[in-house]
Structure formats: structure tokens, C-alpha cells
Length: 291
Image (tube, rainbow, N blue to C red):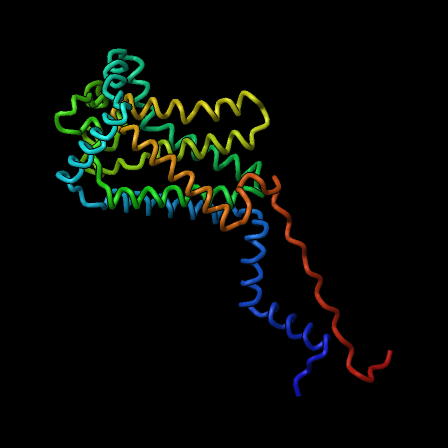
């Protein structure tokens, strides 16, 4: 006979949650209410696997040059209609200052990796309660970029035919661009829309702005995506429209995290709660046992 008493229902719930499936479901629900403390080895595996997938997908997209060139001219025509077609002037102006454009080339090649990884490490160490939600927003941001690379191949300004842009890496013989010079054969040259330099730098800037305590650090968080915009335009690696698309990807990433966790990433408590240990139930004595 079924037991419909409160004690019977409690026993049924306890049995369900004590099963492996029930324990896993409870852990998932608890994670989305309050993300737990991140584990270093899991995060390293996630980041390594994610970057490997990102690189493979980005570079495996067929290089459809004709379509990429047509898209580039369409973007350039749209910017002319909108009167924001100043990239070529900026590119030529900065190229005339040798030491500056060389620094921008190296910035383009390295800083977006260094700063993004540094912010992730800072979140992991100092804001463990916010790390999981913020990391999810970054992953979604990057995933959206892969969609753009696949469906909208785009020649960057420096490779656009009859565009009049200067490939500053080739001109000044600086290293680092995976789509210029000797590195061109190992990278998809037409994965330019959206700009993940902007997507990642904006994610870093927003994270720093909301979580940093010192005002000068927060100001740096604001400056960083702005200087990144100068870098990608000055080196002729992206159009302004690529930057706008990158910012949209960041917005989608943050919104996705908000929908999943029901809170913005930066509104969680600073420290992740330490899981409470559930005491082992006391063993029941056999009926009729005497002391």
C-alpha cells in the first residue's frame, strides 16, 4: 500500500535526491542559483578546449575569396553612406609614424590574449563567486564570432582589392599577425567579422569597470577597448562595422549569462559559498537491542 503521509513523502524525496541522478540534478539547480567555487584543473581544461575549438573552426572555414572581397566592398560602401568611412585616413596617418604603428602591430598580435587571460585569472582568484557566470558570457561571445566567420567571410581592409589600405605588418616587417606575411598560410585570412579584439576587450573593460576597486584601474578598463579600436583600425585589420559586430557579440554573451543565471555576472557575491557538509545519518540500532 502506498504511503501518502508526510513522513512517506519526505522519505520519497530523500531517496530521490540521494540517487546519483537526483544528486546531479540538485547540483545543477544549485549551480545556477549560486555558482560554486571554480576548480583550477577544470577551468584550464575548459579554456584549452575552447581555444582549440575556436582556432580549429576559425581556420577551417573555407576561404571564399570572391565572396569575402564582395562583402568587404559592401561594408565599405555602407560606411561611406553612413559617413563613417575614416579607416583609410587613420591607417595612413598612423602608418607615417613608424614607432607608433610598429607598437600597434605588436599590440594587435599579443595584447588581446594577455589581457583576457589576465582578467580571467583575476576573476578566478579574487571573484570566485562571479567567475562562472562571467566566463559563460565570454564563451558565448566567442561562439557568436564563429557563426560570423562561417556565414560572412570578409576580407579585412588591408586585403581589400583597390581599397588603398596599408598592410602595416607587411610594410614594417613586424611579426604576429596570423594573416600577414609568412603566417598567412596557417590562418583563415577572411575571418574578420566580427572583431573579437573588440569583443574580448569590451568584455575585459566591462568586467574591470564593475569589479575593480581603484578608480584608476576602472579608468583603464574604459580606455582598453577604446585603444583596441584604434589598433584594429590603424593596422587595417578591421572595419568599424566589424567592431560594432564584436560589441554586439559581447552584449549577447552577457545577456545569455543573465538568462541562464537570472542575474548579471557581476551581481553575484564576490566569494563563492563553500559547500556545506551534510552529516552522515546515525546508524539505527536493531529493534530489541539492549545496552
